[in-house]
Length: 112
Length: 118
Image (cartoon, rainbow over all chains, first blue to last red):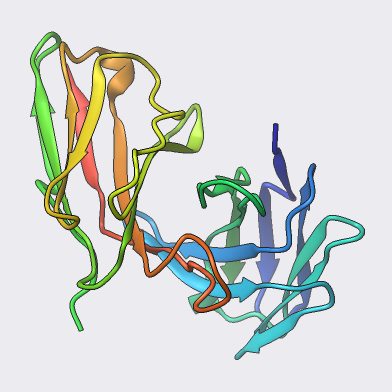
């Protein structure tokens, strides 16, 4: 059974600081997704990582994937308040249906 | 273009009643998914439709849950004899394909239906 674990689950940080959210998964997969969710809202797709070594950046967020280590990271650079949200990573199996298995989510709060 | 839409946005029902939740996927998307988000269980896969293939129902928590997709587009998730533990946000997602190289099946989520069972 595929399991996805994120850490930390809660993160409070100051504006201007850097931090990393980690996403570990338990079985082979080469497709990993990062989503953002604002309170009371749905999931917004941030990154799609499709191969070992993939790195994608959008603004202050950068995501990477190491399929050998079964690890993805979401790095936040010089955080700003607008990035406060819950971030989910999700993995789907190489074979079979693309049913995403989500991590628990990381609730990120950025304080002015 | 239009994204995934769901209705109703909120539904309050009494225990034991049946409810129907609707999802309109993005036009042209062949794959459709239902997920449930609750405080205790996080985000859980429920059911998946791909074209005319038989749906993958492996995530449905009980036989009170069923879903159909008519004409390869609109989907309805039905919960019979609702229980309080069914209270959650039900999210629908769609993607262009479940297999293949492009666009890698990125799933786009609707706004969700918040179900409250009293």
